[in-house]
Length: 363
Image (tube, rainbow, N blue to C red; front, top):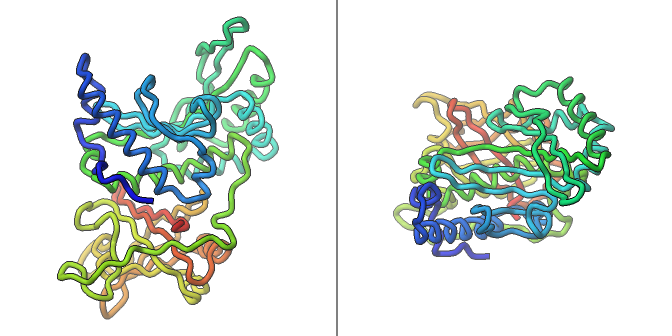
């Protein structure tokens, strides 16, 4: 699977085109870049997540691109990317009445577990639960009210129980449906500065909401990897002055993008048994808070969960960076990876200087 040579990132002309009136060529260019983006993103997704989205593409009518569980894309559930002059919005939508009924019935059997899934998301995600009335003759939907519209961080367990119980009741009535949305906005200027790193960030965001997708559609989580799946490896490069012999390639270059990087690491028996992942000396400056710092606390996202008890260590004598995993992450690593597997590390520095690391199979 090769990334299109035409895609270099979502530049500002892509975003500004959606704010102009009558600029047909600008809009045509923006949509073409968005289509290249979604094609490249789909190829970057782990295999188990791609199985959730058998269709993807461009909606010229809605002026966005999407990953979807069915065709047409807005029939059941989807993740849409909406480019606007000021932002790139990532939106998970569960809109199909049948899938909602199935998912909500499962949620109400264990609302505490469902609440836990939602609260593992970054507080920047907004949850919206709508109540919409269905016209019996035309079949069209009309907004009635919002059962909830706020940050996932502000949702209480008591609220969640009440909302889920109400949505189950409403979806049993022919005249009501309760579509559910999760959305997050990234500033357009920041996205434009990312270049190709926007794909790594988008993979991380998609992976973050897939547990919610499966929750609200009643789908069972896929295994992290197939038992005999082929192993992916970091691409090999010939040593140069910029890439010394023996130093692994760093994708999503730290030098080029100060607030994120992507790296594929090989796992050995000791790594899995002891619960750590080795990076390289070139990665340590990303985590260092000063020239004397030796460790850095990080948040690790794994299998739809979060752990705030992991850290990155600086190893002597060459300043190699090592991710030392908290107990829940260590157990997940042991259960889902085997000797000689590869694991993808997506690291991102958030606005509050927190560092978040997403771990996933390198498939």
